Image 1 (cartoon, rainbow, N blue to C red):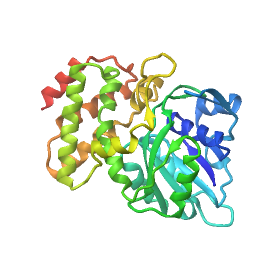
Image 2: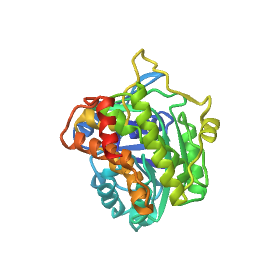
Image 3: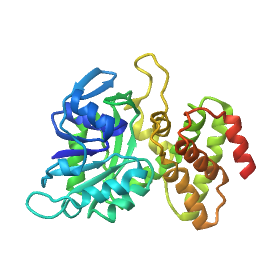
Length: 333
């Protein structure tokens, strides 16, 4: 199989780089300065093993890739960019006839739970991927992935449920590339659990890495709202003990270069000044479910709107204090 990584940022770059190291065929798809850097200088992937530069084929969009029947699309763009990417890729012709949407599998390697629903409107074969992979991308061409001894754990499964020979073959490839890839029949349980943990992303983006009692208390309130709406909606998420049992001893996130922990995906979006952020599909998912099921979600509403404003106004990450953000949440509650 050849892996077309649509969105060669932190997660896409780490997965693509590790697959290339394991001698799998990879194409990285990127835009703007990232595309230029990857094309001209290659992908610089720094892991606890050291820094390696990978000369991987790179494309600036679907028109630059001749799709083949054995290709696998890995959707690693943020969810706010998913519709455009899915629209562009699903209609591309595949050698031998048909379109990508009709013939090729697509893996949604994204935070949140909306990507799979969007993909299933356009692709017949959709696979969920619960991404547990610490990585950062704040400079074109350079990705840092600090997980050890494995780079990440990526639970895989058919969407909306089940498993098949395709996902088993994909998992076998990924397992050879320092990526744990358990295949599960209930991948969305894992993604809803990740959604609850990602409710902290907006707090981190706006106030900085969570390291104060106020920030952790605000996260606890956001997560309590999340659990309440999932219960009201009849949605099950994997519990903490099951997650710890699956991941224990396989990945640690200790900084390997002496630096402190960098901000996560939402913080990185603000840092790069992209003008967008994924809060609508993280905290906003909880707000949506709350509105559908009559459950108040004031804290997640404030986190969503504040993160959106930071992105829209291109404000610097971490430029609000936890106390200021907590005050906004208190006023809304």
